[in-house]
Length: 450
Image (cartoon, rainbow, N blue to C red; front, side):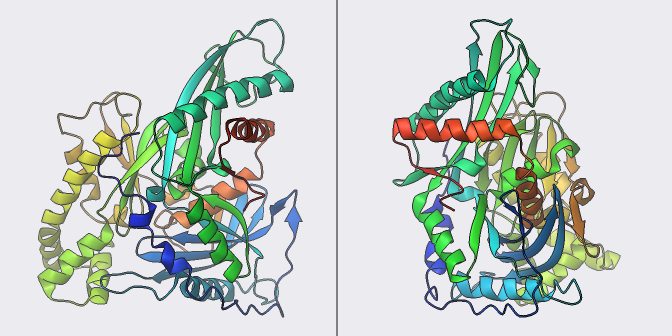
C-alpha cells in the first residue's frame, strides 16, 4: 500500500489522552441492573465505544444471534475547534453512563454490560490484501478440514510475508487477528464453506491488518479504567462493509465523511481490500460557516445541520450553499488524491457509496461526481455514486428514527454480532494465522489478549 500523505497513530490519535485518570477506577453501580449472560463465548450484552475525531459515541447493545438491539446511546462532542478533552477515560465514563441511563429496560432497570467493543481508527492501522492460488494433488477427493487448514496456512504464510515485506510504519507492529478475513474459490467458484467440494484450484483472497501494539494496550488500559473487558477491536471502515453486506455492490468504494477525516475503503466480492484517509471532514465545513457568519462553534454546527436537514429558508439555504462551495472544492481535490492512493488492484470499482455524518450534507454527491471526472482515475464501467441507506443495516434494531450510518458504532455492533455466528472457515483461518505468526515470530493480537 502506498503511504503518500498518510499520517500514522502517533500523529493522528492522541494516545496520551487515554492515560490520564486511569488510576481513578470507574464507580459503576450494580444495583438494579439487568442480568448479563454469555452465549457460546460471545456476550449477549455489550457496549460499543467509537472514538471519532470530533465525537465520542457510546452504545449499550443486546444481541440475539446476528441481530443487535441498541438500548442506550450517547454522542458526546470533543476536540471540536479549540476544545480538547482532559482525558479520554473521563469522556468515556460520562458517555457510557449516559448510554446506560438511557437503556432503562426490563422493568426500568439499567443495562450495564461488562464487555466492550472498541473501534480502532482506520488512520492508525495498515490493511493489505493478497491473493494466492493452490493446486490440489487429487482434485477428485473432497476437501476436508485437514487439507483446508494446510491450504490456509500456506496462503497466510505468503500473505503475511508480503505484508511484512511491504514495510510497516510501526516499530511495535502487531497483527490484529479479529480483522483477518478470507474468501475462498474452488475452480473459480466462490464457496462460503469449501469443505466437501471437489476441484483442482483453490484460490484464497486474504486480508490482514497490522497496527501498533502500544495503541491496543492503551485502549485496553482505557477499558480497564472503565471496569470493562474488551471483547474485540474493530476498524469502523471494515465493520461498515461487513455489516451492510449484500446491500452494497459486490465491488465498490466507500467514502465515510467523518468529523476531521474522510476514510476511503475499497472492497472486492464483498471483502475489504484496503483503505486510506484524507485530513478533511465535517468540521472543516463547520469552520467555514463559523468564519462567514461570525458564529461560535456550537451555533455554526447547528446551522450546518439545519442546512443538511433542509430546514432553512430558500434564501438562507442559498447563502450557506455559497459559503460551502469553496470547502467542497477543496474536499474534492483531496478526494481525488485519496482515490489515487487507494489500494484497488487496478481500476477502481464502478460503484461509490457515501456514509458518515457529512454524507448527508448537501453537495456531497455532487462533489464526488466531480472528483470522478478527473482524467487520472480509471474505473470498471461508468462510475455511479449512491448514498448508503441506514435501512440496509437489517440486523439492527433502534429505538426511534435516526441515521444509523452517521455513526459507525452501529455498524460495529452489527459486525460484532455477526462474528459470533461465523462458522468453521473463520475458526480455521484464525488457527492458521496464529500458527504462521508463531513460526515467523510475528506478534499477533487475539481475543485472548483482548
